[in-house]
Image 1 (cartoon, rainbow over the protein chains, first blue to last red):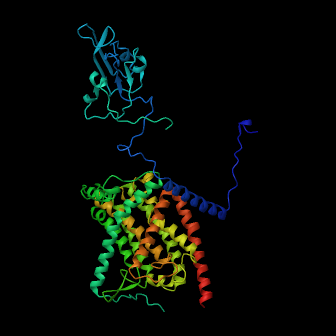
Image 2 (image 1 turned 180 degrees about the vertical axis):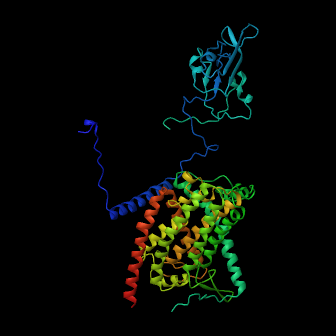
Image 3 (image 1 turned 60 degrees about the horizontal axis):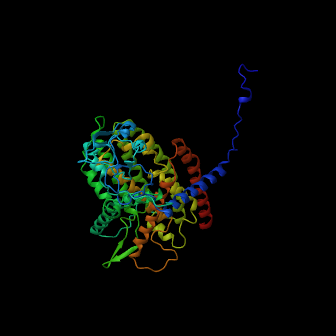
Length: 178
Length: 342
């Protein structure tokens, strides 16, 4: 008995019998023809490319794109009360909120306070959607826009006015069952 | 008895010059179109579009690329041998287009009352002319790889030399079968011998061997080991950029045209149409070009299908399978022809 006995750990490798040269040549030829057929089927199928700038992939309803800030539809007041919970939840630390008191002369939001400054640095945002979850008033949600390239980094810091503005719908929404 | 160098031309010198200009200008005009055709077709084989942005359907893509290459800095590595480095791509492209001179695009026509053969020259040594230039084409690869002064180029050139020599033998033997059957080396003579039956039928094995060997000779996939980009960057023309690179690229495609033309002429009946209908003479070149185009398309199809062989597979396939098969095919052809023609 050898010093090392593998015992039951030995695995028997079963290989298929090797073909005769003629049989393997026949098989190689047949497989080549099968390959040619496969590639030709791709031509019949046609391209699957989406010609991006002209046609866009539709997004799902829960797609997390650029943020939106919301107003109450009836009063027109901002939903955001400047609580900074979104900024606290943000793992990338890209939201900056400076709150101010609402006064009877200058009433901006529905609560006691409002966001005097609300900035999202989209060059740092990771689009995780935690801000949306953290918000107690559904004031911030993730939109569908993913075309966010710009020429300078400072252009990617979105201010409150930009986030409140009705976004240009540049991305098609996926239809039901699509 | 066949005269060894009986050149059957009877045209005056200026007809020769015009034919040379038409053939070479035609080939160089067609090359960029073939390149964009290959890229688009390859795209379709892979479920995508290929170049489609420059010009209508991307047809101006080669033009944009030629402008790009022509305006590039003529760079060469410090270790390269300058003179040979510049000479090598010229050898490649010259030998590639020279072989086209003997491809017959049609029978002898009467143009303006003057008999003109629709080919550059009808040499009775036929294939030997092609193989002579294919032999010189090695120098383009070898010198290019060696003079680059780079190990990847050198490895590519070494592989290339071994590969080209291995497969040239089988390619030649596959053609000799047809030569025995046609009893002539002249390409026009071979086409005339195909009036009854194209040689692809009696010489089917020879045709298959010729096609496989041609993939290796033109160093196309699955035999593109000379420029195996996964291992060798770009093989023997790694260090080339700009016009030198374009010359190698054009040489590769010109070689494909030559091989398609030889396959068309020798195996697929040249300018003949099945059933031999009586057609006016100007149809001949169209028939030849359509057949060449189909063979070229087959090259692209195979490139889209088969993965690159390993180097030892390439060698053992060439020497252990292709060469014995080609020899056997030649032997059987010789015996059959010897018995029936005796």
